[in-house]
Length: 187
Image (cartoon, helix red, strand yellow):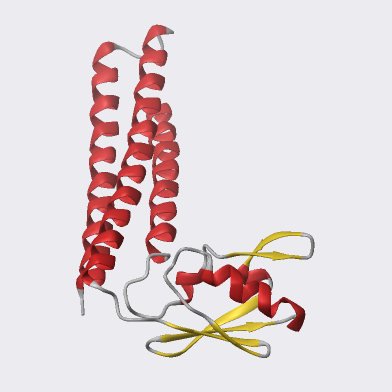
C-alpha cells in the first residue's frame, strides 16, 4: 500500500499544479478592482527580448481603482505603456516620466459577461488537466495489476481513492470559479 500512497501523493501534487495555474489565470481577470495580479500577463519588449512586466518595473495600488507601474529604466516607459495597452485587458495607461498610471475603468455588463465566460474557460481547462492526471493515475493502477503487483480488488480501492481525489479537486475548481464570478458581478 506504500505504492498507493506514493501514487496519490504524486497525483495530489500534479492536481495542485492545475489549481495554482487556475488561480494565476483568474487573478489576471479584471474584476473592477485594482490588483497587481491584473498586470501579470503583460509582456514587455525590452533588452532585445520579451520579458514579464515584473522584470522591468514594480506595480503598486495607490487607490482602489488605480495601478501604478514604476519603471526602473526610463527608456522602457514607452514600451511598458504600449505593452499594457495592447495586452487585451481593456486598460488605457498614461505615462508620467518613469511612472505609468493605469486607471481601472468601471466594467460594463457586456465586459462582465465576457470575463465570466473567460473564467469559465479557464476553469474548464483546469478540470481537463485534473482529469488527465486522474486518467494517468488509473493507467498506473492498471499497469501494476498487469505486472501482478496488485490484485483486482486493490485496483478497485486505488481507483476509488483516485476518483475521490479528483472529485475534491473538481469541487475546488468550481468553488474558485464561483468566487471569481461573484467578484466580477459585484458593482
